[in-house]
Image 1 (cartoon, rainbow, N blue to C red):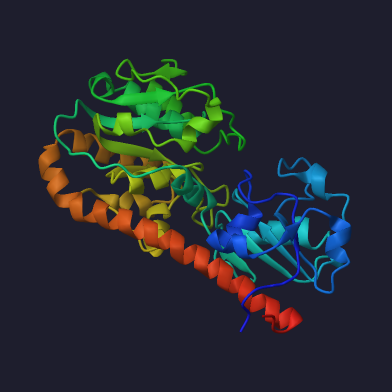
Image 2 (image 1 turned 30 degrees about the horizontal axis):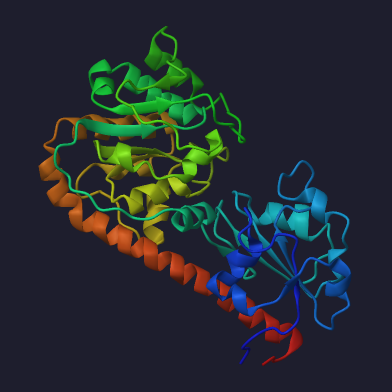
Length: 378
């Protein structure tokens, strides 16, 4: 049985760094392992392991490419990779592992396009786990909340513009909610105007989209010392204390591949829903709720009509989803809370256990791989 790998692991991203591959795979156990940032020291050892971001050698990658491309990773016996965004198994194999001549590997991916077929890949929602690491859970009662919904929309994307347009056509609902749609966030993923653009314009009926937009009901200042993109790393407890329900617009709104649902990129946006015990309506690719359930969480199909999750056409999917927003606006929040309390409490507890289980699975994969390659170490 492997107790500990005695040799030093090569990494240029040590524990506590932004994209912490070492801590990602070793978790709380990382204090019992040794690492080095010296390439020559690493490859001079009898057994050679490297850990690094998954897209270390992809052109225009922002994941430490300039640090890693000068090294020959074909000399390592095992290369352990972490992808914190949403790249497919095939993309990582074809653009990272194969060009680098890597023979043996383990990869943790942050999102899923379709079922992972390579046993050396494992899914772990990095942004969910990262958010959990940076935030604490607070409990507060459901009484005396001033507003119905929070819709903190983030960077400009079509599915978020859809939500803003629907609120814009319901000024009564907008006045009862906290809706922010800022211009301070960078959209790394771009927009595909073909799948929803005309539908949003039809909803607006000749009006201009209100963007950027900050609700009059929003009075809190940005957290001091944070860059705009870091705001997403903070759970907005002050907003949640004032609102009954959440609108969750995940990073993707639709899959460019019409034949397959997804991609499933579950991030800090959904993590906040679990940590704050929120009822949420999801605006994301088809079957996102189904995917969340496959991870062991519960959603709210006993309270609202979540059949929108099964609809492939994003126009119809989002229309039915927003119907649920309008339905909730007409309900007594106390009655809704009585129906969802067990669900939201379960999700919080499962969120904690899911993170522990996932990190243990990653560590187990590494511990299983080492004796296969090197034999048993004490």
